[in-house]
Amino acid sequence: MKNEVKIALNICTYQREEYIYRNLSLLQSSYFFDWRKTEYYGKLHIFIVDNARQLKIREDDYTHLVYNKNTGGSGGFQRGIEEIRKQEGFTHVIFMDDDVAFDINSFYLLFDFLIQVDEENRDRPVAGRMFCMDRPNIQYTAAEKWNGGNISHVEFLRDVRKSGYAPGKVVYDADADYGGWWFCCFPIEFVLHNDVLPFFIHCDDVEYGLRCGRKPIIIEGVQVWHETYDKRMTPLMQYYDTRNPLFVNQIYGFLPEPEQVMEAW
Figure 1 (cartoon, helix red, strand yellow):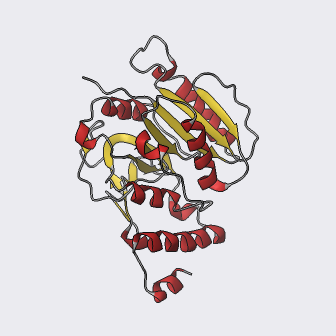
Figure 2 (cartoon, one colour):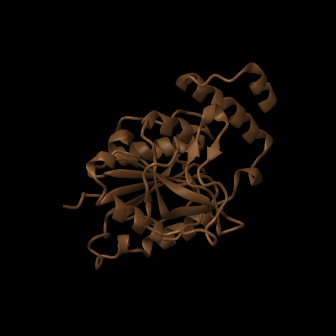
Figure 3 (cartoon, helix red, strand yellow):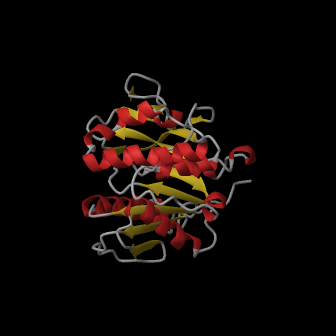
């Protein structure tokens, strides 16, 4: 017997119109919006939280646009959660960045997995793999290990041309703590009762994944392309990437030595 699956896609954006319009077009051209494909139709709802309040999107039963104050990624994702909670029937929530590229097959593979996953693994998150935007055959990471802030990446810099990459292959036992919000799917039971910490940007996905407490499942082919960390570093990002891990470590008992904090600065 198949599981009932209905997914809410939670996207927070700020002045990334080109990505949003392109990705929305891909999604709305998919089987999830085609009434002839009965298995998928109506099983994906899109919630776009616009912190810049500039997008012009026609809403329908499955596409929702929410204007929000600029409360950062954390606040935007939280607003998305609040809107999703107003509707009944969802079984899963995907948190996805606004500046990714994807193949629609990632959504089909995820959906097909969720409708048949067994009860033992039903309450685990599914982490989407992140590939390099500028090197599309290189997987940057499959999921993340926190290590008290010294993050390590599962299957780091894997060249899928040189290894057996089989879309649909499920990995249940990866040594990972959480999945990044470039693409990560959580069961609704967790999302209904857990808010995002107000970090503004960065580490909200870390803390949320650690709080979930279940190791993420990874699936080959469930993936997005995204700019890597080193290409997006600014002094402001460095500030948040130093401050926010201290809160995470305090909550979960990973207490770095003072000299480690100073080196980060």
